[in-house]
Length: 139
View: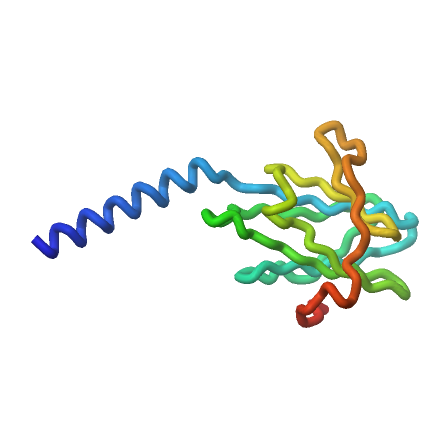
C-alpha cells in the first residue's frame, strides 16, 4: 500500500509538472542599445539559479534569452550594464512587474525602456540606485 501511494504521488507530480510546463511557457527577453552608434554596451545578467555571462550589444546588434518562469511567480533576472565611464544595474525581468512573454527593452543613458507590441516605448525606468542593489557586482 505504501509503495503504491508513493508511485501515485510520483505520477501525479509528473503530470502536474508537465501541465505547468505547458501553461507557463517560455518568456523571451531582448535587450537593445540606444547609446551612440560607436558605443559598445556590455551586459551581464543573472537569476538566482542562472548566470548568463557577459554579452556585447551595439546599436545594430541586440541580445536576448529565453527562460521558463517558475511556478511561484517569483522569477527575477537582474543585469549590470557597462559602457565607457558608466556602470548601472537594473532588474530586466521581475515577474511581479512584467506581464509579458516577449519583453523587449531598449537601453538609454538614463535607463532602460520597455517596448510595447508595436515596438514603441511603453514605459521607461531609472537605473537602480546604489542603495537598492544589495547584490554582489556581476562584472
